[in-house]
Image (cartoon, rainbow, N blue to C red; front, side, top):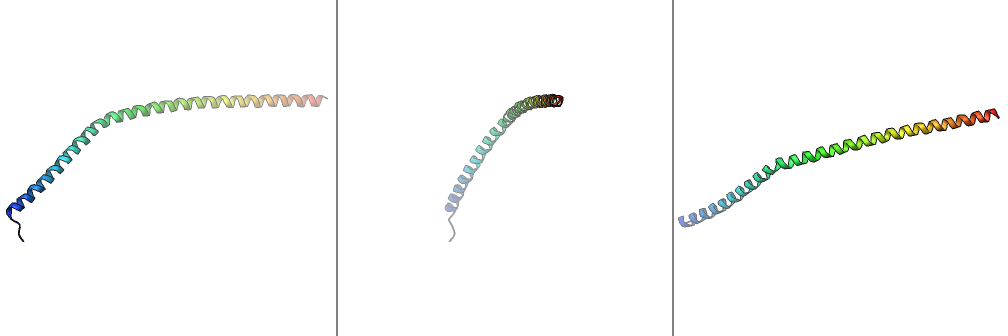
Length: 97
């Protein structure tokens, strides 16, 4: 059965309202995304700065570890030298007896 012109107009008006609501929702989404995208460069700069600080702290930490490692190996070599010196002194003492 064919719809009357008034029913067709009502359906068209209802569809237009739905489309207008969708359009408004999409417009708000675009505005929200635009605002968010405007904040991204500031957030990116903040993250880059934080990354630079963390890299500097890591570099400082690695330098400290290298320093302590070098000191530890120096101490180990001095201790080995002392042990060898004591051992040679004991060997000489035992040989003289």
